[in-house]
Length: 209
Image 1: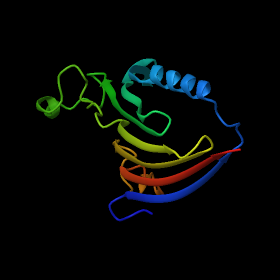
Image 2: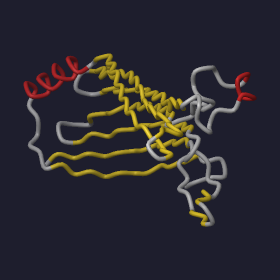
Image 3: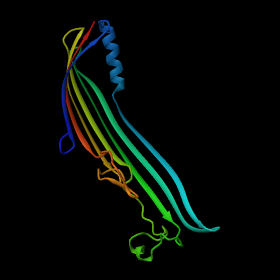
Image 4: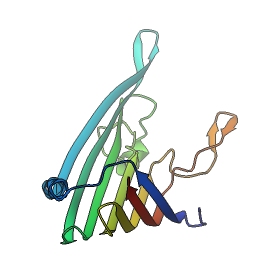
């Protein structure tokens, strides 16, 4: 349910039936070993760069020239763990990730072109032709956390109680707001790509046939 502040809160009860055979002690020990190996701290770094150039001519002479160099740099951190509080009875699982993407549209123009205005020299660094960079360009932050407590009633039945949280922030000079986008004499609607928060609680019953 969306609220006025862009928050989402949800809770549900889930009954899951899994067509799996009952596990032996050896199978459960093998699963625990796999889970122990899965406990980890991770990090990834990604970067993309794209360059476009636009120019206008007066006859064969160069008039205006604009260079657009858009870039995105993303960093993602994550951790997850599975802890057996009571072997074969109580299991606690948790995971958390955080991703930050920092975008930049680096714009430069020809100093002798029509974009150059001497009065802007105190606002925009020299050498850019009077064109200002766009710093709010596809900037995002995404954080999510999950915790789960599972109780094995027997070899076939598991009851789990869990909670998940997610927060999303977005900044973009073109798309972050919901105000109408003018294009010449026309007006277009815009999607709401703004930030949100989500809280989800759940109770799950699993039974193995």
